[in-house]
Image (tube, rainbow, N blue to C red; front, side, top):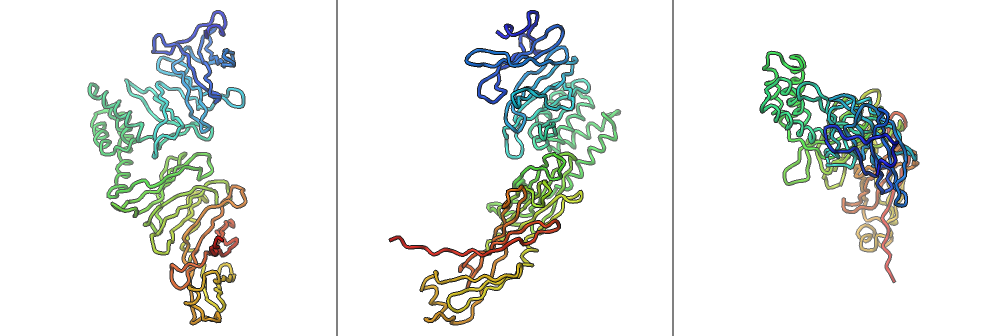
Length: 481
């Protein structure tokens, strides 16, 4: 049927290495829930793709696209971009071991060619590979590039910010497969380059103990591959990593991804820590930043690194249109207080720009009970006074504090807790977040809560300052008649 839409002398291409496998595909590439028919053909020594669309149960030609090379090795469709629409993935054969990668995306009523950095590959695998928290619906591309013998340089890419970038979060998953490939080869081929590539796969998968065995074997050859210097340098890197991570039981607690430097690459941010057995309590909580473009990991040690329910939030707090990092940890104390930090990439490095403990130190309050069922809350930052009316508390509560004329039986002072909640809110909807801090106001004892101080903090270009503050009180329950 496809031949009916081709020039008279055209012939449908077959996938190389797969006899009797015509390069024909049914896939929905425009996200209308109806499959298109895609085929590759040759006409006058030129390769083409044709896309047919089903309209009212009739196939109609949508577009003919000129290809390259002398054959085709791959034709598939998968959602590799973040808009979840299938991308056509084509490998045009340009040599016995080489194919040119072509990524074709339906956009705005037509087909565009996504940038591939002119990648030529020998083998290609496309899969939604699980990262730290499993598959995410966006497919990755594993590119195998032939080196020597049956050895290949392998890496995994993801399409982000209109380019292919290394998908290092899926390395532990995919490079286990690469390890198995080289282990099978080494059963009958004891060659130095296979040991090198096995060691590289073990390094990328995080299998460092086996890496040390493989790298030592690669170093034992009279002519190490690719060079003695390269192998020794690789071994040194892994030894340093093992030394830094030895003697701890770190687990990944939570992670997120965002552009922290403004270079257009999505960096990975995650918290690690040691969990107490049988308890939700975490120790040695550490902030980790994996910079995607530079392939460097920065570990940031927090001033207070123990607590419960550690979380991270990525958003722009400083107004530079680049993600900053908010870390919040519950202390677990009876006051329901938190540790909290904001980090921002400034002047070429990640810097702490907010510590909630510093804010607590600079925000002092007086809570004074007064005659006639009033409580005065005096704030030092900003310099303001709030008056709370306790009349709604009821006779039983008030009679413990006041006489029948509303006069205090004795002086009473309450207090304001340190920050117990810190929340990012974009009040102006301009893409820049403020911080809203909640602090409980306690009366005679901690369970005697009489309201909350709510403070909005905004970045002024140098630091977070108080933009506004108010006090919220609890309402009186009304009886239903």
